Image (cartoon, rainbow, N blue to C red; front, side, top):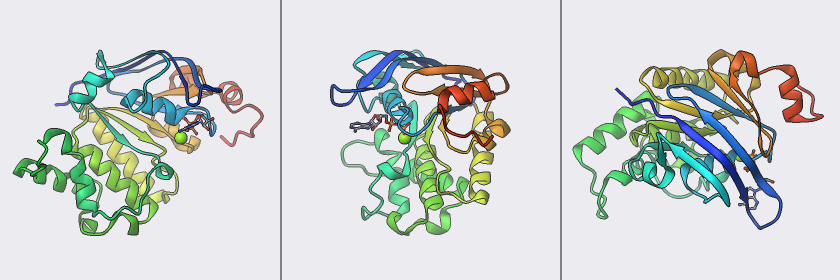
Length: 245
Ligand code: ADP
Ligand code: MG
């Protein structure tokens, strides 16, 4: 069984070039064992918040904790796994799907990176769970958008992260693949994982997300999906943009 871990973001501010704040005094909580959707327009700071939670960038101000631990400690214990946004990865690096998924095991290996039987077993079971076994020897750059997403989700599974962060996993993914990924996320929640996902598919959020966090450089609202995902809140978050929900 997977321990229920929370994410706590406390007054986080981030600037990239000492210019405009990408995040300003952002405070929110991802409740343990939930699927939580992070929603906001382009440039609202979603990926910046993900990177702050992963410890990929150091906020100028504020504090992030995962399972009660500072992110660096949580990261050392492999508590968080990350599925990056597609346009942030150079997909043409010459590496097979199998090797991408094996990267999820690197944090458990010594410098020689000799996979153990357990590492290989976990890579295969992770490929199985996302339906990517037939593609294990393909180069990652040759895959379709949805297949790449599933390969990186398999990497997160192989890492055995308790908290799984997915940055726009459904962008450029067909409906059937999205449905399969949502089913898998529901299984992972049942196993005890805490899942934070950013998505532009507003229509599907109420079908599988327990909670919603609305972001536009700061947290505008958070709570249970039914209470938070209101027309008023969405208009506040997306400004003048038409809401299709
Ligand atoms: P989202 O993921 O919601 O689209 P981001 O977190 O990627 O938003 O970006 C938030 C803001 O920070 C945007 O104004 C973006 O241009 C800026 N930004 C993001 N990454 C960088 C970077 N590496 N260098 C400079 N500015 C950045
Ligand atoms: Mg982003």
